[in-house]
Length: 485
Image 1 (spheres, rainbow, N blue to C red):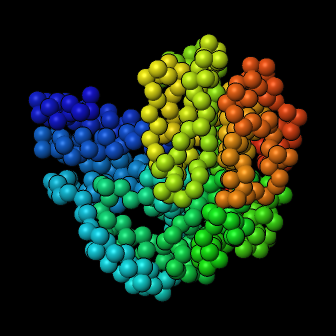
Image 2 (image 1 turned 90 degrees about the horizontal axis):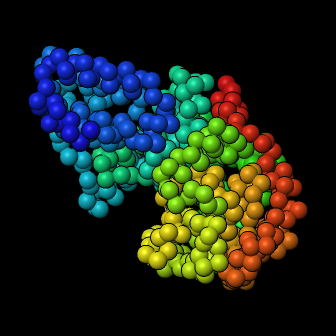
Image 3 (image 1 turned 90 degrees about the vertical axis):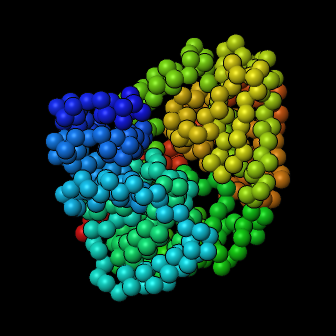
């Protein structure tokens, strides 16, 4: 009923409002972070109560409103503080007054020229000044250009820090959103970056390319991909998808620790990042906790079956191809798997889920005649999709490492193996390395499924070698190591 709150508050008296706000405050205090962050529940509350409905809140209900603002500020995700409506909440808490809620200014959206100026000023002046001050030992930054909210990598890191080190101040600078105050984003980001003791990232992050972090800072690369399948970093130089030695050097120059899934991979990551092997730690990947948590897997399976009735009573084939080419070529990405042929041959027993790589910007449109056989899960977190997957069809994606944890069959649909090898190449001979049968046509994949010839003797051994630890405690190991002082 949140969208109706302005009308409800307009027609209610102060007694109702006080009771409503107090009950809501109690509820928010009890909700786990996963619910609050994943459902964006707090965003809805802030928008519908403390913004859209505030003009109808009675004077007598102001104290209850301020208490709600305090609990909202306390429970907010660490990437919300550059959001204009959340800035008003923080201001309320600092001032001990609801007056900032009267300010309904729109977010400050910078023109391209102003954005360049503010970015340049923040990087050259604000960051430099911040580095001159003592390091803020309790400041932690989570940074990414690929996602707008905490994902399965950053969420367990954030929760573990709050649990083990509640004195730490955690701020997240994710991909900028329209509702962000852009000037505030740049200025506070480079100020906090210059003073931070800990910075966590999980991918390339261009804001670090042209700067040198202070010597006391710990920059922890969590790297988004498990294992080492396709070449990356310095190891990819000379292949079509690589850029330059200078680019790779600047991209990885600030790392103080890199986290990987297995000690066997240390030489590969040392080469890729040009790091000393002593700075590479095999603690496991935080995001994989879902695949080791039986209660979570049962919950997610039940959730998907209720949300998508098409899944009930059927086995799930997930097709998860990786991207090809540069950013323009990715826009023209075409699914090579013949879905109509698969429906014709497998439709009685199976459904197909499409899960495109996040870098593929093309939107999948499921044809009307396939709507009872195909679901597009491209917007859903990968490991949640893997939990409901009975058979994975992929090509050159590192998702094979994640999925091997579940010990379920993988088919490698490598229709363009020769061309892709020229683009990225691999650390191992592809045909010898992959833990499943390799096919070049849809018909071959269908035959494997129909004859149940998908499991090879490699799968379990592959998973054993890929992971040092077979549990969901990677975040705890990382934080215990990084923050041991």
